[in-house]
Length: 183
Image 1: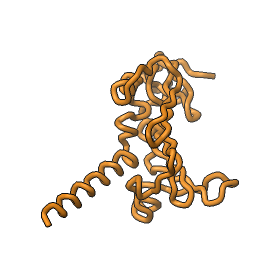
Image 2 (image 1 turned 90 degrees about the horizontal axis):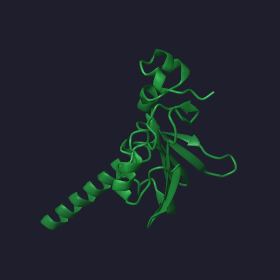
Image 3 (image 1 turned 180 degrees about the vertical axis):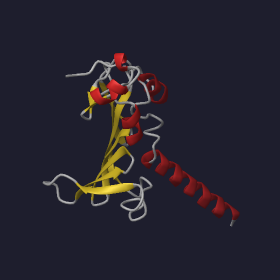
Image 4 (image 1 turned 135 degrees about the vertical axis):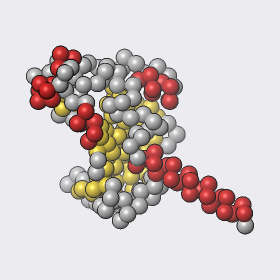
């Protein structure tokens, strides 16, 4: 009986850790867009990644794409970002075998629509395709019939309020000289 309870506890702990990794603000394996650098990717995944614009890795169960900034105040997502060169700007996971929302530790009805995620129709030409957007930004899940094909880690809403280098923010900012606005 004691081993059964320990097994249940370990399984619950594993599911919670997986849910936190997927749905939390910690990015992928600790790689967080607009905060992590190519050196962090080297440390966490291995290899040499600095000086590249983008990389794709094929892992056991997924394909991973990571893109990096290549110049000061580079434009991403329609905004100019004040982040150092070689900073991670997006982490995109494409599952080789689709996973379910439950596999990712996300509960329909509890986290979706009510608290953490908003559901939005996907591509018009793909039936039952939906996107789940984390309400504070930073995560998009692409699914069809509860089967997840892609997860994208993006800047959070907090990043947008702190790391932008656009005209309105740069005029107010003390480091506006650091920003070379793209016209």
